[in-house]
Image 1: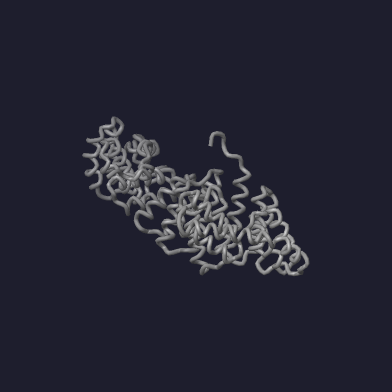
Image 2: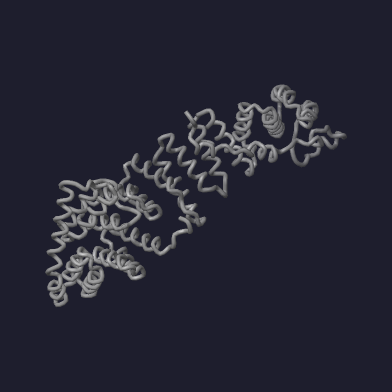
Amino acid sequence: MPRNSWLNRLVAVAAASAIAAALPSVATAQLAKPKKKAEAQQPASGAQYSAEFRKQASKVEPLVKDKKWTEVLAALPALEALPDKTPDDDRAIATWRLQASQGSGDKELLAAAVEAFLAKGYADASQISSMNQLLAAHYSNKQNREKTLDHYQKFVDATPDVEPDELETLGRLYRQNKRFAEATPWFTKAIDLATSKGMKPKEELFQLRDHCLVETKDKEGRVANLQALIALYPKRDYYTNLVALYGSVTQDDRVVMLNAYRLAVTDVQGGLATVGGYLGYADLALVAGSPGEAARALQRGMDDKVVPSVGTNQQLLQEAKAAVAADQKTQSAEAAAAAKNPKGDVSVKVGLGFYSTGNYEKAAELVSQGIAKGGVTRLDDANLLLGAALMELGRRDAAKAAFEAAAGAATNPSMGGIAKLWLARVARDATPAPAGG
């Protein structure tokens, strides 16, 4: 079975050579015996080697210089067995073992040497990142998930200029080890870092984060994640999941659900992925007194080949259209009565009727009128309706102001999220498509 392609990111082609370039060396001058007894009694500057180590190591150093790695490795056990070694003796031995292991081409030896070098604290700050990256790659190839994760975490921690893809890899490793709560923040950091660099975060990052949030049963987190995903990648599957979550977290609040369905179905890049979604919107719109929305929802579902254009679905569509025709006959009188009524809610309700019948100009006028009168029970709902009507009219600047007002008046996080998604659509619709795209 082929390895996951994302794991290939663990393998740094230049990691081994980078380690070799950064390795401290044990210079010949440092190992030479002092020429005078007095010099031996003076504190030496730099590394402090024992006399016996200097004697034995002087035979090994030429082998290192000549890159006779097999002979170097064979000589090291004797050096390690010397009594009364100094810390610098031990560091020199570990350094030679690291160089010889790398030069030998034996990956197991190299990994063991690197791991020991790190564990003893010999690595400089500049070496820690690449050494842990090499070990993560090694243990990934051996399918040791725990050690892969451990060293990759250390690699990320030691890398000041970490990239979004590297944060994503760390999140994937936690996810692979079923540590979902720990994986989620790394996907978030990858998204945030990409954004801060002026990059569009990858769609897959949100999908990975969603899976982790499902596993940890974090519904509110999933809502926030899907909202962020749809703002960048509006697709019917994502809208469908978000609408379902809105229903769950709000106990099917009718105002929230009507606005959520309207947002999804009016988005030409969105829509809904299930028959039940379109039928749910149609039923809710009919109850809310907006049969035109019901008709448009059913028609969109049929056009998208999601809702079968047969039987009871066609009957429901015709009934919705008949209700629209009936409403149109009384709208003029209702608009005149609303203008005289001091209650803002009355004008907003009549505005919804005009939105239903597709008279978006009149809908915007009446909803604006109702908001101006004051006393509107749900200003968030009214402003979302106003913004939706203005979007149909192509008046994006005015729609943006309405959605901003809705966000400010939101009575719950779901309504605030819907307002922000409308604002994302305003920005998206105002951005010209790339040439050839």
